Amino acid sequence: MAGQSRKWMILVATIWIQAFTGTNFDFSAYSSDLKSVLGVSQVQLNYLATASDLGKLFGWLSGLALMYFPLWVVLFMAAFMGFFGYGLQWLVISHVISLPYILVFFLCLLSGLSITWFNTVCFVLCIQNFPANRALALSLTVSFNGVSAAIYALAGNAINPSSHALYLLLNALIPLITSLAALIPILRQPSLDPLPPEGVKRDSFIFLILNIIAILTGVYLLLFGAHSSDLTVSRLLFGGALFLLMFPLCIPGIVYARDWFKRTIHSSFRLDGSGFLLIDVDDLELHKELLMREAEASNNGKELDQPLLSTDDISMTYSLTRTKSFEKGGCCETIIGKDQLAMLGQEHSARLLVLRLDFWLYYIAYFCGGAIGLVYSNNLGQIAQSLGESSRTTTLLTLYSSFSFFGRLLSAAPDYMRAKVYFARTGWLTIALLPTPVAFCLLATSGNAVALQAGTSLIGLSSGFIFAAAVSITSELFGPNSVGVNHNILITNIPIGSLVYGFLAAIVYDSNVSSGIGIGNVVSDSVVCMGRHCYFLTFVLWGCVSVVGLAASVLLFLRTRHAYDCFERKRLSSTQLY
Image 1: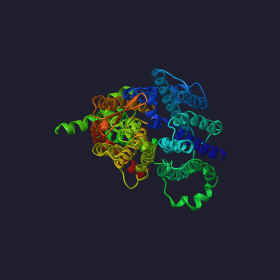
Image 2: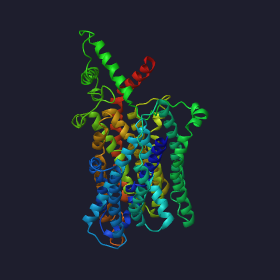
Image 3: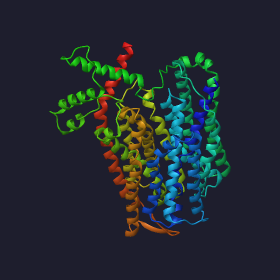
Image 4: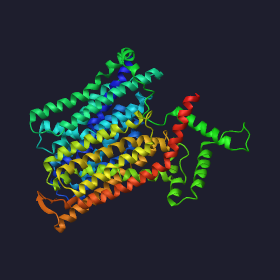
């Protein structure tokens, strides 16, 4: 019983870590001041934002560190990376010290690297302590990473609303303090025995409660996250946010009272497992066995006692059959039918992965959807400034953060609705990409504050869903055992997108200033572009790129829909047979 209580304490500690370490999302809050202090162009400022995202390319170092150091040591290594990275930037922006641009670039890189190390620690904690419901644990904790910007906005307003440099100081100190608070639960990790089926269902119910608390937290931050009219009120609101983050500590009490919940409440719910990941290990093996039997039955020349076909044989046979069925069709039918996935969950090595058309369609959809949303958030400070909405930067940051949080939570909704409404997860990905081109169209056609807030909300919602659903899609399409390597290959598009899209926006921004199309003002040593023209062409180009991502996701859905439908049919039939 004590072990069950401790694992929930660890989950709460993981939520805290994720909620306070999404420090890259508040870059736009202080980017204008950093640009002014360094006296750099918009292109050079974009390189600093890219440096933070480049940390994801070196995230594998955290896994290597875990092979030689305890988990808590890796946690504090991440905390001190962020402490020095953000702390020295705060000294620079506060005019305490002066550093050359190249050193500030490496400080941004170090800060971004700390975030990936924090994420690795959280993933390991969830997997170790919730083996039966690890997908629900990962989904919940990752969602809180999207709300970091709103929490930091509340903290900044509660301390000094007029100081943008304060964000850097908070980025340096709060993750370190959070790591200290999480140390005791991590050091007291229990050794858990495998849960019985009733225990898995009980945990699923507790996760349902935690998701309800998470929704309440998101609504609270959305409504009050940007409030800064009164210092006392801001401090009370920040205290309320901390209370909501502390509230899940009552979960151990729920664990101790599990018998009462089972008799009075839990019996009224039907929770057949977590259902978050479509690929369950037992279902997957049964799915493969049934496919092997079908392949054997269709091979009339073989005896019944001959060995079953291997997974590779099934994949090749199915792909050839599907390809032949599309040969008489047009070009689109050929693209959709060629080399389709035979089944979900088939393991792909890195070499096989990069040879798959489905992977590149998925890569393009992510590159033109989720990555472009992150770049938009990095440029939010300059976008608001160019439209004369600098005073609303904190509000916009809170909107993006809160709707990104809701998008991450919504990524689990299709699985809770699975019994009533079944749809391939790649189809949900397509639906999630729809708001992005709509948002950029709205931003390009209207430059008022309402359009800016609506567009920011739509982009946050879309990118948040994509970020959270990506791990599940990768495991389903290319194998759950290879998801660590394959997903790291996928997210290489984030730093690439940060460089390409950010560089594009910076070139357009600086060209408007030099050509005189935008009204150029000089703030300190930095030239600022004012007017709709500063980002109009950028919004148009980003909108066109997002349409490309939408088209790629549609093709991916059409190519994988049969595998999803086949898996669901086999799963339902196996429920009746076994």
